Length: 190
Image 1 (cartoon, rainbow, N blue to C red):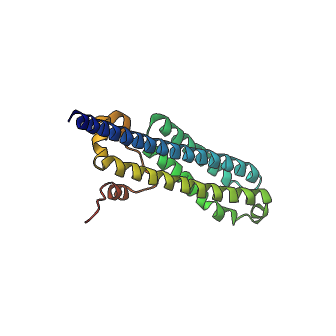
Image 2 (cartoon, one colour):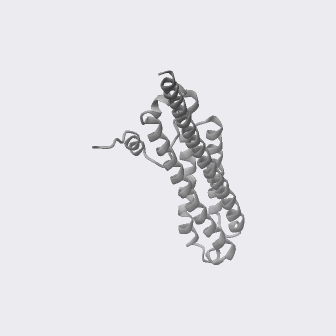
Image 3 (cartoon, rainbow, N blue to C red):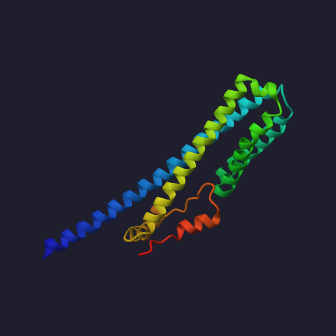
């Protein structure tokens, strides 16, 4: 009888350890995905700087664009420093909007549009935006998986035991509040 009791206790402790480690692994995956987004955001900012330096001789638009991008980048960095993820996301999304409208502006400047450096930098911006979109989707997917896991039974018991270690609320990128609530409250219908 004692042996059975010991085996049950060992099984429960083992399960708690495995569940805890799985949650920690998912949290670290989310943090890694956040770092991947940061890498792409830094890359995008550097490409914008390069592009603006190339086009300075062609147009006045870059002055406003540069000021907007720098101001938004500063807002994003201040929000990140203060832990305000929603403000950071909003500022970075505005930079994405600027990037998406650059091609329209370049149409107004045929010489600029024909410049090889500008064309290469435009492609780099598009490539960076695509990589950024992929990184954001990967982050959202990992947050969704983590949230589903931590709410499921019996993992929610482990979360209740270690709330400061494995219970976090991560912000989704580019999802409306309604979509987040829909994902958070999703239940399987049997």
